[in-house]
Image (spheres, rainbow, N blue to C red):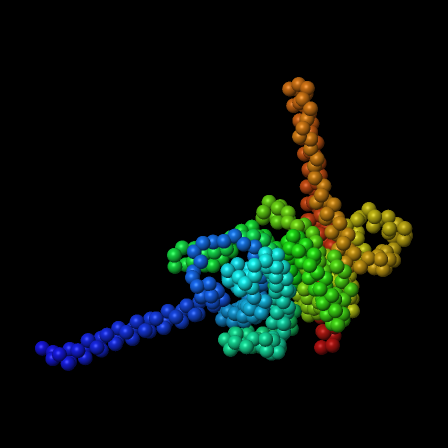
Length: 493
């Protein structure tokens, strides 16, 4: 039988062991909470003094970011490197948010959502004037989106000076690991040129301002502080249709920014920077910098949205021209990527002119007459007849009159014309008698059918013949150049 002192010591050791286990669990729980819970949200709730139980309807500014073509980019990296690059990039983005006071709402794969306003925004909590709050959110959201794009550009260069903006050691380590991967890829002779041509992290950014429901969403144990509502959905749609390397916002948000002079401030800064860089964007017009137009979403039944797309990179034309020249050295695969770039930027005068000049300087011969004949065969025949069927003379004449951008402009007009040709019907037919009404309806429907058949045939011809042949002519010209380069290498070898 145990003596009392021994029994007491045994109980004490067991109690200490239980306390130690409880302490270890509590320490681990605190580590988990610190690791996974958003610090900004925790700090905001602590300042409020309680967990908000009720949702509220408030105006917020919402932004979305998506990495363009990341599926393609990820092929250059191992799974571990993909994780390191994304962690570094999101660390950089979060640094911008902290600077402007935004809240990182969520990360989903290669996409990110953030917002301004609501309980977690200290500026909003301390401001009573709703107009002042709206102006604050509009300005900070816009310039945050712009800076996010600038960050992605700086991230590509893996410039060490970038780290000076990040004082937290954990952030610096995440960025340093990502930069080490970027630097290795850039310095590896076996992959450096293909990567400079193809591995460029570019993002789409979309933003909107509007009234949402903000609060706790989700089941017990998995709740999230989130915002829901049409302004959020519209912001996501702005992002999905945003230009790569640019920003798209709703027209209503554009009007708010414009009426308070923020866009004029931005334009002056953008043009100043472009001129300092010697970029073609130094002469960009207001309508080119801020393109206000309607966007239709096919997946939403052709729903139309009034939007404004905004250019952000002041040296985009020159960067795209450099990328095209790098791609020229990569055979048919590079030629296909160049074609993708031309198709994407065919409406951007500055980018297409920079690419055309670079290709011409390199010795790529683009045939304007081929493209013109594909689009306007009858006009082409008339022009050719006027020059006694001298195709070289016509090519020279068209080469002087039509730039590559003007060819693309004609192609766009062609497309707009055939897309707007729709059958016109008359639903409100006059009624005199049953037989007469049926006869008129039949006549009307058959006429509509014939009109629609013609319109469908014209659209099919454009999309299956005209458009592919115009770009096929450019593709052949690039292959011709590449073949000539290979012949030169064989001769010199």
